[in-house]
Length: 114
Image 1 (cartoon, rainbow, N blue to C red):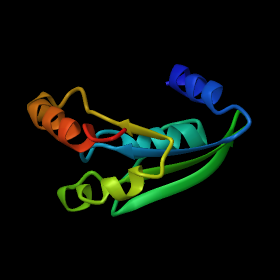
Image 2 (image 1 turned 45 degrees about the horizontal axis):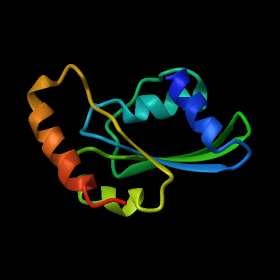
Image 3 (image 1 turned 135 degrees about the vertical axis):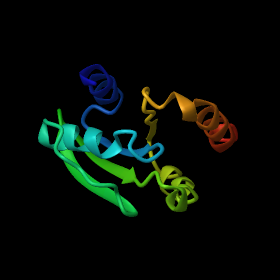
């Protein structure tokens, strides 16, 4: 994860970065957000709606949207990803059953993004 953060910092050094974390429920979005902001994964509960945190890492002001992955929130993903510099689509590698759905969903959601 440090490599990802370093790569993002190099792209936006001294600036601002807005990130959306999306993925199905229990894929680790809130855990990643806690790791970025607190430096450690903390116990979490399912996200109701969304969490948003602003913080500074390595000279980059970051605003991260952690958007709920339950079915009722997925239609909102596009609303929060449009203005973002980066979209991170988290996948629970242990949830092999949902891989075909995730691939179709990601393809259909992002194929028209320029």
